[in-house]
Image (cartoon, rainbow, N blue to C red; front, side):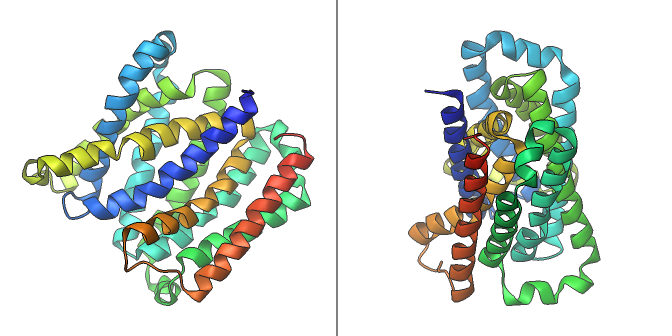
Length: 304
């Protein structure tokens, strides 16, 4: 199997994993506060990635520990980014949050154009530009609720938090690609990031969350929380960094606009009260058209 084919599989794993995250978060929201829940789920990532990296990528894992600057910086960005996202959702709505953070797509494209010369040709492509706009519009329509935007003028704090979260995601993505391209293997790198991120999130949970819920959660809830850290966090993040390395940051992030669509598809299977309305069906069509154009642009540049 070629490296590019592996990168495509990695991208599919990222989309699938991050599509599952909202489902697990929704299931666990009554058991933990958002900070503690994220910390517990990251424990699952550690329990999976650390032994896997030790036995498969031992030297690369030791190298990741010996080079704390990129892993600590990426972990710090990750903790702050997730905290800002949590605050943004707390002071707004989930749908508004999903809409505002879509600004991360042009942010990543701009940063990638500046930092990575190998990505400039595809970003300049009219197919990529039009497809990205379509994907952005389609993903917004998928999560849009009529009441969301009407509240926007009053939600200054939420808007700032969500915008900063999107900006930090752009930095995380671009710096993550730079790190795996020149310094660290993505799997052991994220194993170490998971450790530092878990500590940061649990510290936040202790001071501003509800740490008592850790003791009151049932064994089954703990098991589900730990399990939810495997595919949606450990595998999805590692696969994302791998995909970025070989397919490009701008392309990978644009294709991640498929995540809300796959989340809806999974939710339709799990919960009877989930359904796509007329606007969401239009958004689905626009999103798929946009992603097809982005794939066309990638193919035209002989990159996939």
